[in-house]
Length: 332
Length: 246
Image (tube, rainbow over the protein chains, first blue to last red):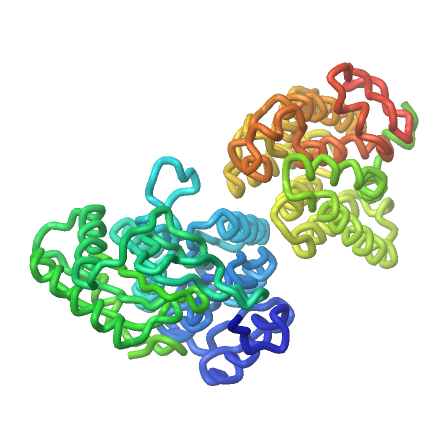
């Protein structure tokens, strides 16, 4: 048993959200009635607001990416559960700009439906709304999964680039098209050596046998589709990166933005070792490692695992990525 | 056909629907326990209870029946907001989209058959856009699509109460058809073949919604039997209007 530090698991998300808003009061404010956070400052050039959301348990995503140069609003749901359409609708009304609002949605059935209902309500009110669906998880890329690939770590990179683009004054259709292109050039693969601790039970959500790895985990504490033998890090990262490059088929010389992401209980020491191996593989393949992030950006509570994301970027994407950003979890 | 039925108000319709959901909640829950997670009756009831609260608040301001298109649309809009804002899960809010679409068309055209037709057709389109379900997937779309088609086939001058009767009849036929379908998505998709022979609760709710315009429906069982015919069926509190067209 490893109990969580909580008043009650029922209030964990709202308690954390209140604390988060207090800690970053200079950057954002919380609407406690509808459960969304909005940025205090945003570029005056922005014509379209960016809004995202999804289950809690993935901190710092999404509220951690609200602020100048990134999201205008974020709507957190309960742990691993979609936000209610009301949160998305009210949050969108609060931040919509002259040319409306762009929803950045991770591909899960519940999120798609709730963001979709909110979009229909916005249309009813005459507010333009479009969607970018992020579906970067390579492990769920198979014909048997009718819902399609899941949205995971790549969401952070796409939100950052779209934020930089929105600050240059792009319109709704241009931003949506950019988002679709980015999502098509982005894939993620994750492994775990131990499950997250279920908050209500204080126990691991599943067991991984000694010497084994769950290969292709998502961010909701579910088992992967395959279990493999624990391999030395170099071999593991070679295999993962090989699959990502196989799916994206980049030409040599293409620029990549990478994210080595901890799922909640992996040390920075390990993550940097992973990044070293990733860089070595990309160098050997003639891929230009243009930008990289290493750390806990999209977690799955305290899952002991990491994800690798590769996004192939065009020069304009890199300029948007480099533009100033100031949020709780990402700033330069 | 009585004058009262012809002069149907949306407020009365929504209240009758709430009565219907209250009296059939146990049966809807029993259906959902066979094909889903069993919370559909509760969610639908939460929506109609919230809608009643909002209708009462509206009534306290202005008697709805006396305000023409604005009042008619306001009752539908109040019910829509209740379902969209206050119901968890996805079936309830999806139902709210149908109500929202009806509110928009009634606001523009008044409580007329063309308004009902446009509202149902556009509501169906919105629900399909959001949920991704097509006819044959064993969802509420299987009742709503035939209802929309039935409405589209009516002459524009059809009395609204008669149009809703026709929509209810087509929806019930759709409900019976869902019993033969295997779900590809939605609640029933997870239990697969085990849902064979059981109609989709969301589709039943759509049929109850249209049928409630004529009066509260107290028992859905007769509608679900294979021998159900084309008559309005038993269990309707009010005497339903006879023909689909005047």
